[in-house]
Image (tube, rainbow over all chains, first blue to last red; front, side):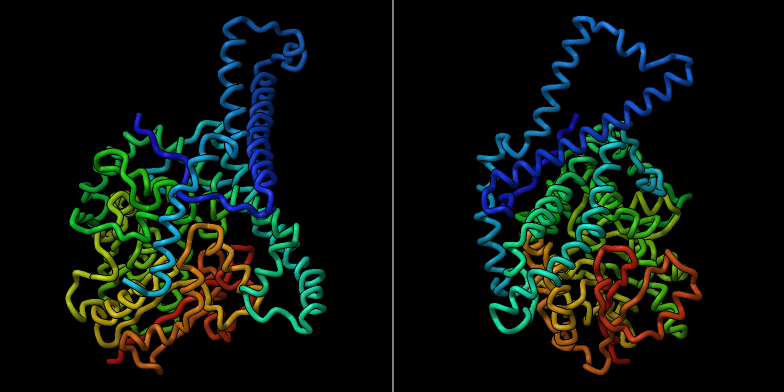
Length: 114
Length: 399
């Protein structure tokens, strides 16, 4: 499958002076997004099961996970952590390299030079 | 709820992807309405009085407000969350487009040749260079900007733009994301009932969502739409075809139009000039003057100029220039718009400026009644919030 990049060029700004705070905001928002996705899914799941006559809440409490289930959850959990932690991912180091080129170009163009 | 796109190129997210998109859209609505309102209050009640105590006067312009606001904790949260939400718009649509890309490309090819749908076309020119203000800057923090291609006959950039805009707009830019084109074209139709344009040109059209609105408003007119990016043009052509609207798309740079002198009745742009370096704005305006017939109209839907705004509103609108990878935005808003027109050859007394409500959100009679309004600026002009008013400026080419 074709891969489309998910990260834009340039340095992420720091609004709080200490960029750690900015990264924590990113984590918090990604966490909020992921949590909402789960809440909506759980809501839907319980509705679907209820319509099928299954008392989901009781059965969830009694459920035992298989080894395959555990492995699948481990992969999903890893992706979950990577998403929430993206502000501290590899781009943390690499991202600013193109900003110099953007700044040089825009300074020049704002002045109306060729 | 995020509205479904009204054409056959719409891609279906999974339930989880859909929930994420809904979250991002909801978050943006919260930022742009609730947080923006609170931030304005913070300015009025805390930041401005403090500035006044220190300087014995209030901030006089956008940059002064910006400098004063930078140390305010609410501005920091507003900006940080808004910046993140912008990234999350694109992150919530890219995986969906990526997964559906092969099908989208196929569908676009079929629609392109489907004369039964509409008699539109798309003409690409690989000789058209991507200008550096597009190739170097990921405008709107969109990965790959408008032009990147990932496959042959690619339409990904168009699909990402369409789906991203649908979330970005938070249901405030029209059911078909074309409220700008609908409002501007219908304003012209209602204000100038004796004006019957036969040829209309939309420059920097991206996916042609607003070009198609002109074709609907003036069904007898021939509508052309140009952009430098091939993937958005392929997608725009398919989008218009799918909706049964004929638009002639062509890959072209608005600063070097390939059309003959005096060949169009209307030259239109929307949200285009503010992404251009000043040199290119001047070049485009001169080209618009050249290709307009005498009696023709240049109309740019744009952000309102700083010289007509209150200091706080000016600061608020310029946020994108500082933090949304739109580095030429403020430079454009600092210009005198009428001077941009006269500098290109238009007569001063032929310059126009319009402020209008959203056509697709109201009855035509109410919209028409607003046309006689003062056209004055307020804090709703050009600002994506509840009750937006769009701004347009341009000039008639003397007959």
